[in-house]
Image (cartoon, rainbow, N blue to C red):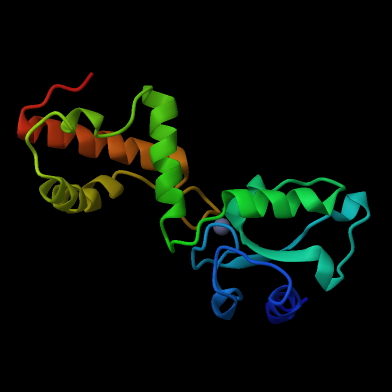
Length: 170
Ligand SMILES: [Zn+2]
């Protein structure tokens, strides 16, 4: 099934993370421009067919997280609840959430007390990011880093910023 047909079918009926004009090239859940897969809403093994009303377009990472349930309402419920409309931020946000799970605190929290200007901190994060991303690798078959790796990058950036500003991390 052609991606355009899937978009044409759903555009008048539903809302997704991206504008319908870009929905053939951006994932309907995370909003990233990525190779999209035509995914069954109800899996084939549960009786789902290739009809357009049983298809959505997702990137590989989102596809692996999508519910594979006999009731198609769950897929849509999940899509509405977890999608973000701001382009290219979804997996960074997931990385921040993963940091909290791994380290038990919010990233950069200790900088709130310190007298470091928010704009300066943002600029320094961006400046350090390139070197930190160079220490990571995208898993085979994936298009982007996963949330746990992004969390590691945030941890490294935080460490360097803490050194620079004389802040002690917990
Ligand atoms: Zn996606």
